[in-house]
Amino acid sequence: MNTTYKKVINSERITPDECLALYRSATLPELGVMANAVRERLNGRYVYFNRNIHIEPTNICANRCLFCAYRRDENQEGSWDLSLDEIFAIAKQHAGSGITEVHIVGGVHPRHTLDFYESMIDGVHRMLPDVHIKAFTAEELWHMAQQSGLGVGETLARLKKCGLQSIPGGGAEILNDALRAQICPDKVGVQGWIDVHRSAHSQGISSNATMLYGHVETYEHRVEHLLHLRNLQDETGGFNTFIPLKFRRENNSLSGAGEVSAIEELRNMAICRIFLDNITHIKAYWPMCGKSLAQLALSFGADDMDGTIDDSTKIYAMAGASDKAPRMTVDELCKMARQSGFTPVERDSLYRTVKQY
Ligand code: V47
Image (cartoon, rainbow, N blue to C red; front, top):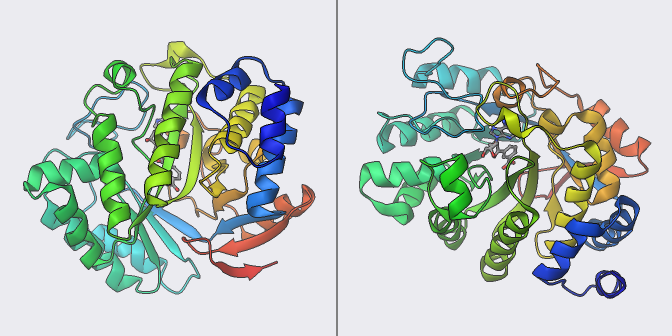
């Protein structure tokens, strides 16, 4: 622990074995000190947020991931499948509202084609020309590439031409094929997820990365996941943000796994901050972890609080997150940062400052 501590304080990279040792035995206060050192080196005392909305075009999904509370079959009760006009109407409602980002993700619809997704991005871009479009997880993109037969590179190039600017971090779950076979057997494998992000980065489309943890994975799995991300970031530099997502147990087939404690959430946040020395930002995604935990996480490595959301996402509430209508004002976000001793900064999707408060 002493060697690891010295390395972290001296800005040296820690090894996967050292990371594993932190997971196994470091205490929360020890981790907090180290994570804070990394956080302050990379992000000073700033806390970032943006003004954003989500659009979730459909929850109809060909995949059956055990942790998912959201997916439905076609025509099943509780399913939705928005038409392009309905999607454009949502975008139009937010025109002129001051949002700077729209985050679009949905299920892997069995029948939609790449043309449909191109029209979706093109139409949203026309409605919101100054708003950054962050859309489609690697999973959705991989299916579009398969369905169209065009391959990942060309699929991304076409969407970029329509207005796609970055891709969100979903679908990563845990980057270990044996574990994926257990919890998300229909999803793209590790290499596929990585290839989509590598291809995006090579075309100037930056992206985020998530980790879904706290279910049936081991600490070894988490370290392996983080190592994949750190390696790809060394290669491309294309990740903007890392987002740890604690597994929520309601309404899904992995409920028996339970949920990890708040202490483990903060320990995990801190260890991710320490290990991922090359991904500048770490997000405490408050619609999933809750506002209080997100605020605490700012002292354990997190520097980003996502955004205002405006009650536009359902995925987390359906899986058991307590906030059933997630929405925060800029004032609330600023207050949360200040109460914890940080300076709030409104950012755009690429972390350029919009306004320091
Ligand atoms: O990949 C699904 C997760 C992810 C559950 O890029 C669950 O800025 C916990 O990727 N418990 C999608 N998590 C969400 C996502 C995301 C979220 C916020 C910001 C960004 C970003 C990306 O949601 C899925 C999966 O890992 N998820 N079910 C659940 N029961």
